[in-house]
Image (cartoon, rainbow, N blue to C red):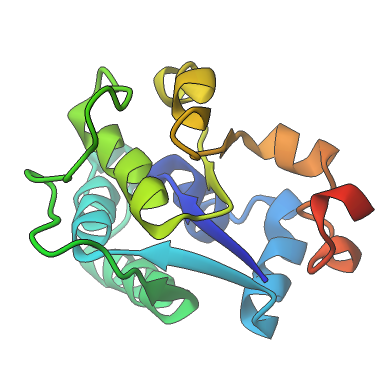
Length: 161
């Protein structure tokens, strides 16, 4: 089973913009082949972003996306005291320019997720540094190239792909 952390932009692609590349991903999540991890702080960040006027989502639509997200994700187990202001990070862990994005890196670290999927260039720029701490960062294209977003490939190890 694959365990992933998704940054907010990927969640928007998935649940607001319905990116066709993520149809198989949705099926894999619903089938239980993929676990998407969340946390209260991540859910709060999503709700904040869903309220941006540029998205043109009314309160009902925002609530619907938030509820769908919660129904598709699994609550992560993290260290006691972990929250958006206290990410409990080891010495030398890479820091993202945007403190909101640091949350996703920390969640991937603490949950030992198979990957953090991001579209944020600042997060993607931290790949090598994060990998030293066991955090693998992918963008959607890399996920596709590696076959992770193909339904028939879910459940296979990276060496099988």
